[in-house]
Image 1 (cartoon, rainbow, N blue to C red):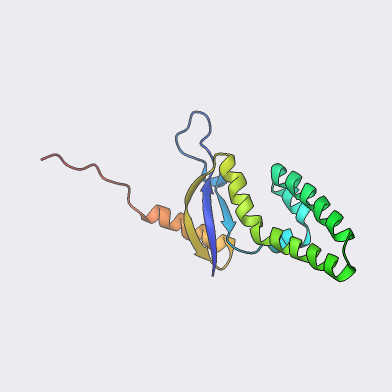
Image 2: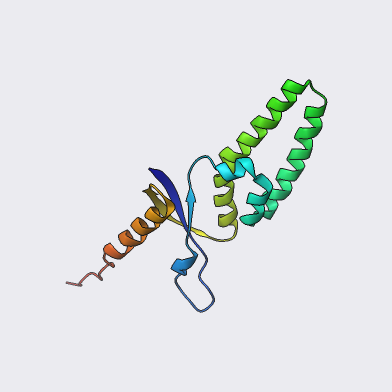
Length: 135
């Protein structure tokens, strides 16, 4: 089972509650698309600040790797890519929190669609708090 973090967008003007269609389910763990297509993945997720840092860090890593023997240079480049993929979903959560998304909870599921179904089913099952009767 995969663990997902649930984040809610800030409420729109004139509303007290966030739009459930805007909820984001971010997977915990390694991000394969970020390993193979880092820059397009960052652009797709609109993570502009992280993209700028990634480009600068990539230039630094490539400059450093050019001054070393070829096997060491390749090792550095591969390890840099793996590090980015390991932290990609954490950076996505951080970016969403910077955009004032609110943490709602953690849910598990085999796929994102199953986690979404479980999350919303649990929300509907939990009864609303009842006001306490005054004695």
